[in-house]
Image (cartoon, rainbow, N blue to C red; front, side, top):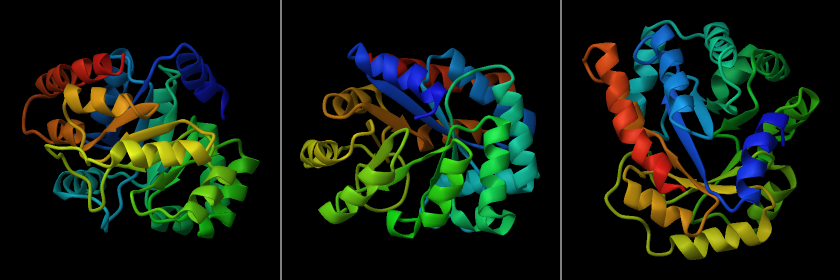
Length: 265
């Protein structure tokens, strides 16, 4: 676990508190505006930000996060621009930052080169949603070399053997997907969520946070009864995609996120 993860995650969990993780897309609604959204999330008390690296074929995402990826690419987010945005965020906050996305842009840039630049820019961890732990040797080695945590997804269908492999490599946290399918807001949580999280936590040592479809304080509170924290993405991203003046977008983000953070307390 990186120093920033340890300072934030370790101290909060040691006090019996839960974690709130937010996902936003780089370059949405604009380049500098996405930096301001990240800084607003930090001011609201978010414990970690997954900063989405846009990709042209985000097949694991629903319509909202797909639209954000398209907007990020349209606004000029390349890998070098992404690192510039990270540096701007890191200059003003010590909140843990996760490079979140798909493997294609990382492999095209070069895995070790990406890990080196990510670490230098201020990234703490990497989560590539299409790299299962069985295929993560190159990624894990590059991240370990440059002081980055590797973070993996678990799901209701993840077998014990894969959970054991994830336990050997996951650093920072493990992201448990609350349901199968693509990202997007949902009205109900799975009836088996508690059982799933207890299984994951019995095997992995890293904190386990739950996401995919959460959007209300009630859902966040429910998740925090069984997990170490909650992740909200699409509900926040949807507000950054609104055709409104940017100050109004920030106010809408704060109106949503403030109660979600409180629900973790």
